[in-house]
Every structure is written in C-alpha cells, then in structure tokens.
Image 1 (cartoon, one colour):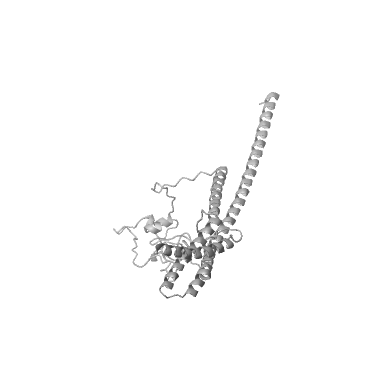
Image 2: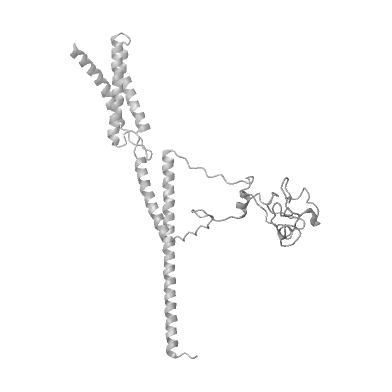
Length: 328
C-alpha cells in the first residue's frame, strides 16, 4: 500500500497540530500547578500569621498553650492485630504433617489427626489442633468417611472449619457501604485542588474576620466597655467619692451621739476618707478598667481623680449640714 505525498503531508500536519496542542496543554498545566503552589504558599503564610495572632490572644487573656498529645512510648501496649500468631486457635501455626508447612493458617478441626502418623501434638506447640472440649468430626456419623474434606492426610485438601462470628469477621474483611448489606462502598471521587484551595481561602477570610472581632473585644475593658477612658475614670472616682460620702454621714451621726469626737471627724472628712476614695478608684481602674490587649498602661487620670475625691467628700458633709439646718 503506497501513501501519496498529499496524505503524508496531511498526516504530518495532523501530528504537528497534535504536538502543538500537547505543548500548549503541558504549558497550561504547568502554569496551573505554579498558581496552585503559589496559592498554597500564600495560604500557609496566612495560617502561620493567624496562629501567631491566636497565640498572642491566648497569652493576653491568660490561656496557656495546649499540651501536645502523649506519644506512644517503648512500653506502650500492642495495638489491634498485634496479638496475631500468638498461638490462639484459628491463627497461623506450623503443624506436623500440614500441607503448606510452617506459617499456614489453621483452625480448630483442620489439623492432622493422630492417625496420620505424625504423632500427637505436643503441649508446647503454639496452637493445639484440638482445643479442650472442641468436638472433632472424622466422619459423617454413620461409620462412613467424611470425604475429601475430612481426609487429614491428603495434600492440598483441607476441612472447612466453622469459625466463630468474631473470627469470621476478622478473617473476611469487607468494605461495608452506608446502606449496609456488606456491599463494598464506592470510592470517593478525587477532589479538585482549585476548589479545595478556594474553600480554604474562604475559611481563612472567615478566621481573619473572627480574629479581628476578638481583638476588638480584647481591647475593651471589663468595666464599662462601651465608655471612653475619661468617662470611665470620672464614673469610678465619683462612685468611690459617693461611697466615702456615705461613710461621712455615718461618722457625723456617730459624732452626734458622742462616739466620735470633733477632731477625729474633721480628720476623716478632710483627709482620711478622700484619700481612701482616691486609692479605691485607682485600684478599680487598674483591675477592671484595663483591657486585655493594650500597648502600655491605660491612663487613670490621677489629677482628675484626686480633685473629684477631695471635693465630693467635703461637699457631702456640707450638704448634710445644709439639710439639717433646713429641717430645723
């Protein structure tokens, strides 16, 4: 069969087109892989930054790092399946006269009989073919042989033991589908890397948003979080001064009945109670008025607090005097 020049040229053009298409596909796949690797690196950097921010937030609110999971030491117990081959019935053992030699699987009732000429199994063997109390069925029960399955000395022929339900499940593993019935489950379809990266990017954006909200909440103090620092300080110092004013009224009543003399009353009104109110407000602002995350020490407005405390207490005493005189 001869090929004309036109046919040869057409085939060459087709091969050239296929070659160019393959090169373009390879270039597009290479560019796609580069983009995927770049996206993975970018997401890795974002995850590292988010981990550092979470560690910083945890230290700010007093949560320690979680302890790593304990690793399995050299004295750890064997896992599932580690006890196979230890000589239990139905496991691997080497029997005298077995067709497959050492390492062949055996089960109760499948080993050779004493009449096979190999002698009774010793007590030190890894798995006796006849367990204590296990019935053996050499024949059909009518005095006839059990056939090929019951012949212990024939090579390549073994009996079919009746294994317990647990051993049967271990011996015959099957992939069970969610619908049940022992039908093998369908293999999951391969995930698209681009779709998975897009989902990871969205989750990272959501984590950033929640992290920003957590930082904003951590920058607010526990006491009056929506108030400004100045308004919070004024409220705290005024409250402490009001509490000191109540104590002033109690001292005035005690002085009226003769329990407190005039000098002690004047000292507490002019210096003692205002100082107690000032230091009380200072400690309250330092304990509950400080945000969990703040750079430096928040202002406590000491001159303002001193002025408020040393004015509120004498003013409360003056208001009491005016009220008593007005009632008279």
